[in-house]
Every structure is written in C-alpha cells, then in structure tokens.
Length: 531
Image 1 (cartoon, rainbow, N blue to C red):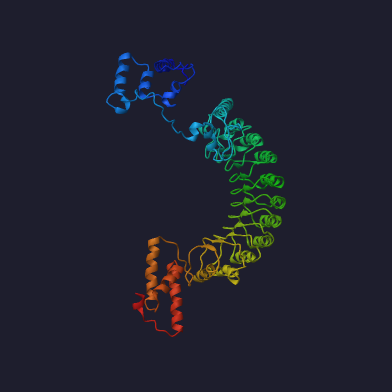
Image 2 (cartoon, one colour):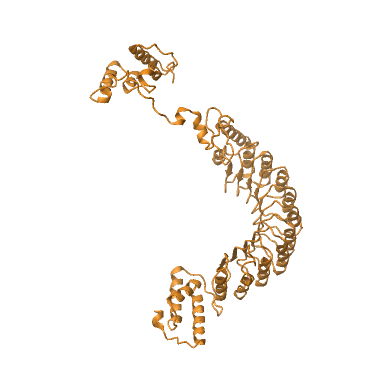
C-alpha cells in the first residue's frame, strides 16, 4: 500500500524522517523506504508499527512501554537505528515476482508472455487444455439458467459445477429431452469440454438431436457416452451425420439402447467415412449383422481399434458376415463378441479370418455355444497368427476331456508355436488333472497365463468351488488317506500339492504315484516317512 492510501502511515513516516534529518519522502513511497541508510531496506520495527497504528495517546504510550520494556533487544532498538544492517537474502521468487510463473511451469517458460494469465490471475492448466476463466464460467452458468427458464426445467447443480472443467459426467439423472437441450445450448461453441458422459438420463431422440448441434461445434470433444438413453432411428441418424464433420471424437458408447440392424446401418455408414473414431461400444443391443453393413464397415475402416458387440443377437448368418469384414480389416485390435449365438459353423469363418488377420490382439468369445472342436480349431490358428495375445473362451460348453488338446499346439513347439499369445481364459470350464500336468510343462518354457474353472476327478465328478476352510480340510483328509502308505518325500509331496490345488486333483495325483511305485516293485509300507 502506498502512503497516499494510508494517511496514518504517511504522518508517521514524515515524523521519522524529520527526527533523523532526512528529507520527507514523496507520498507514494512506503514508510520503510524512507531512511534506507538506517534500516537497510527492512520493514519497520515493532516500535514504528505501534506508532503507525491509530491509537489514543495514552494507549499508544502504554504500547511503547511494553515494546521497549525489559527486553534487551527491544530496548536497544532505538539506539541502533543509525547502524547499517546487511540486506536480507530473499528467495528468488520474492526478489523477482515474474519468477513465480516461470517456476510454476517447471520448464522456464514464461506463460505471462503468451497470454496464459489474464486479468492479473494465474491460470492453471488441466489435462493439457487451458480452462475457461471465472468470467467465462459465470457466463456459461447464466446461459444455462436462462435456457432452463426458457424451456421450463429445473437447473441441475451438477451441470453448473461442471462448467469450466473438461468433462461432464452425470449418471442416472433424469435430464430428459428438455434438460439435455438446455445443456447443449449452454455448451455450444465451448472449447474446454473434452468428455461428455450422460448414461441413463432418458434423453430420447429429441435430446440427442439437440446435442448434435453442440457436437458440431465442440472442437476438443474426445469421448461421448450415450448408453441407456432410449435412442431411436431419428436420433442416431442425426448423430451419425453430425459426427461425419467431427475430427476430434475418439470414443463413442451407444450400449443398451435396443439398437437393431435398421439403426445400426447409420453407425456402419459412419464407420465407412470417419477416420478419427478409435473405440465403438455397441453392447447390450439387438444387432444381428444380417444386412451386411458391418461387413462393409470393417472392410473400409482401418482406423477403428476397439469394437464391442457383446450381448447382441449375432447368429450364424450375422457371424459369417462379420468374419468376412474381419478378414479384410487391417486396423482392429480388440474385438468383443461375448454373449452371442455363435455355433460351430460360425467359427469356421472366424478361423479363416484369423489366418489372414495379423493385427487383432484381443478376441473375446465367452458364452457363445462353442464346442471343444471349434475351440481347438481357433487355438490351432495361433500357429500361424502371431499378433493375438489374449483369447477368451470361457463359459462355453467345452467338455473337460477336450481341454488337454487345447494346450497341444503350444507343447509341440514352445518357441515358435503361438509365440504371441500370453493369456488364455477358460473360466467356467472343468479341466482334468492331465491338463494341469501339461500346463506345468508348458509354463516352464514360456510365459503363459491360463485361467480355468474347477478341476474334475478322473471318474468325472466335478469338484465345485467351496470356501477356503472347507477346501483345505478336504485336501488334508483325502490326501492323507492315499499317501500314508507311500514312500514319498516331503519335497515331492509339497510339489504335488502345489500343482494340484483341489482335493480331487491331489487324490488323482497320489493315485498315479502309487501306481507307478507298484509297477516298479517297490514297497508301499512306509507311512512313517509321510508323517
């Protein structure tokens, strides 16, 4: 504060200067600048601060007595005024205020020169984008409230708080068509919004059409989640036509909207002409892929990387059309076809596509009515396909006797056969003890993660998953009955138990060991060693 703004400080500074014989400073000079030769540029002492306060004469005299009482440092303060004191060493950011901004960027770049700081304030960057100023946020809030009054809806506090941020996330709030239109009108021409997620808001076609105008003007919009909103043919047609001119959107979620082949035709046309979309989620719809639209879309589009078609109605005809598009595709990396009606005939086209496609990395086929023969045909293609790293075949009607054959292609040549695969999921499928033996041999030579269901006993009885305590109890009881008469060391027994995590597996393993001992003619009466 200058002395012109504080008359009390001005009078005290003039009195201190006259007492020392120094000329009176100009009105705009702060009080600690006068008499710099006596203070060394330091702020005024406690005595000067007391004098500067607007206090009555008696109270000011008592305060001066307290300041210069018995304290030796304060008593000598007035006598040492003429001594020259060394200037204090201040931090760099205090000596040069512009260093505060340069040190904030951690690169030495002065954001003041580039217009990053407006109205004298420091503007933080969020996710690489410059957020809107407080004035712009107030304008957006006022625009949103005005739109709500115009449409006759109640403003949502979550929407008002999201202004100025880079994402708008609202789940399960019944915005409706009018509420969505109010949001779209307020966010029109916004340059800060990069993600919009409004699932389960029942926006319908009217709300989606209002949102399309905002999508056309959003230059930094990267993600758009419209799942569970009851979208129809009219809304999807407007959205796909609007996204043809959008060069920034990379992820689109249209799941759980009861989309059929008639509405999916607009999405397929979008894939044929859009080269910026990277992820497309169409799960939990009624898509059958019988019209050939997805075949041509995958054949023309080489930029889409993730496609989720799980929980749809893709049967034999749709699967053949889809696999033809996968055969000609050169960009898709993640394909999810879980919870569809694939059959053994449909898998033949998939096997043909995997022999030609060397780009796909993840393939999910769980819950698809695939037999062990179809699963074996898919696994055998990995001898020629080196790009696939994740294969999910869980919860398919694959018998336990067919599971050991799924590992044979890897065992034939552990170095070259299927060298790209790293994760095989067989969840919900029972495997015999021979499967575990083959898996142990395979994992010694390569890094392969295999997930399987329960372990089936040799007689075909499936050992269901139980709690940890029950499983441990069964393991101890059943294993001890079969190994108490065997001549087996503790290390060998531990290795067998680690290999066989279920009680039924341990039982089968110990039976095999006893059979081998009897064939060798060795005595089995050595329960003392086992104990």
